[in-house]
Image (tube, rainbow, N blue to C red; front, side, top):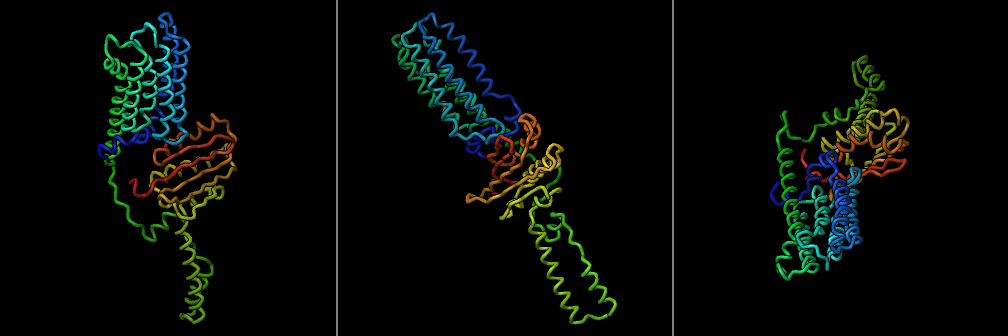
Length: 381
């Protein structure tokens, strides 16, 4: 992966498992901002700063972190750069409200905590955005913070540029540090994923007709009519014209059966497939990578073999899209409480999220899971 592509990839996309299992940074930011804002409002109120403005600024910053926390939930797709617009707007609004509350007060510029609310929102976004986006947000936030500091505070003693630099330093440093952190995480994960396996891997080649039959695991049984024909030929020691015609008819039937077996999706060979309804008109399932097949097979098997889901049918639909990706949808009736459902699905969901795009599930009595398979030339396996 090149330096540019590293900065264009988010840590969450490079390693989805880490940001699901690790600490919840947006939630930590929410708690820290709420507690800190309340204390600051009490401490600086005697210096002429409106407590209402401080609490409102704190609320806006908390809302920004909550938006990030909601977007980063495990059952939702990976966070896109465009989703940073709303939390960043709330962070900027928090800083501007704080600047309005400090205007005319005796609080010196060096003790202004307004940029901290914006910086906290930016920190919550760092694991979910590419380094280039984090750096750009830091630059934008720094410019706005610098202008706000010049407007809200007396610059007669330190000068306007000094006030600008003092106000913009925190968002700027958070942007630079966040971009560096994002890039380092992506680079480290990329190097780790590029390491060779312990076992020797052979390049995939188009499978032969026999291996494809073995892969689908469906033997073609020799019927009684075939055995009867062979018995007649053996007993008579000759092949008559009628027997030739019968052999040709049987051969055509066997060939049709073999072609049907080869054209079947591997999804249709899963045990208990009578409870599994597969709609795959384009044969997209057979273009999945090994990791995708393994994750999907494990999820389906767990659902079909679960004693609490006995008798429930599972439906899976695959559709090829114009951009080369494949849209996949699962649906299954599940009457479990939300907590037990999450506990049952979480291990398989996390494994699947590492190999597909835009994975999400919908809550309710019916499990509805949707994701996309990237084009075949975008991943190797």
